[in-house]
Length: 393
Image (cartoon, rainbow, N blue to C red):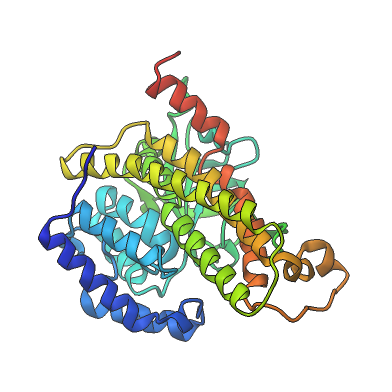
């Protein structure tokens, strides 16, 4: 398959590169300060690119699938956030625009666009992660409210969120996918508690969220009762495509080469350099091959089609490659990485003189271990590929 950008698309890519270069020169690529993020948000909003996936009827730029692809590749492969707004922007906004009523859109979309309201996703539960339809968090109707009881786990950034969009069980049907509804829950509501889940990277980004007789207005239900699974499952395919992390892997491999070259130029004698470079080259070749599948999905989107179950190949292989990329960056850190490992942190080991990126890449390595679980485990992706792509079952 051959995929070429048109002259107009090449011109758009040049514009994107110029914008990124103006606001993210090399010395600011890793500037994740609130001030820099707000500066970038202001730039995107001024250009009308703050919600590049939104339809024009909701204030989006009406980009083609190829323009969105170019934007995502050029930003991510340069270590730049494609957009701000988190889960609200990425996951909730499309559901609001597709299934929410006018009042719900008017209440919630402005806060998502301007990043003044933080959202988290309440899907996974104990015993209902990749097999999400097994969820048991119950929402029983009581007049004009639902009374919610249960818990969600692995909830990213819930401790910083204002609201949660949540799948709950409103009835027990013969098929477990039935009877699931989609609720918007204000996390300040009495009965909601957020409990941190420690992770190996030493950061706090995962949580367990419990609900004890939490009253949620029926007006906060998206669409019809019992249709939440239908609303959510379409986004799962999109989420798994995005979780391939191809652009991030490209960014990391490029940074590895640049940083190792800088170390060598400064007289550092790197161990086993030839074998390391061979493994890095292998990774780059596999990334290039995976891009072919990504472009296949893009060509289908341009033709007005919905990419099929083979997007699980992107998720499966992409998870493996991002783990390999973060492993190589950790190895590139060599001894400078040791003070930032969990064992050394427990002993308050002093930092060693060395590259300033060592601590960041150690954290990214440990975070990357979750890539084969988050958004659907590798085992689930293999089941989908076996059944729906290879048609072996």
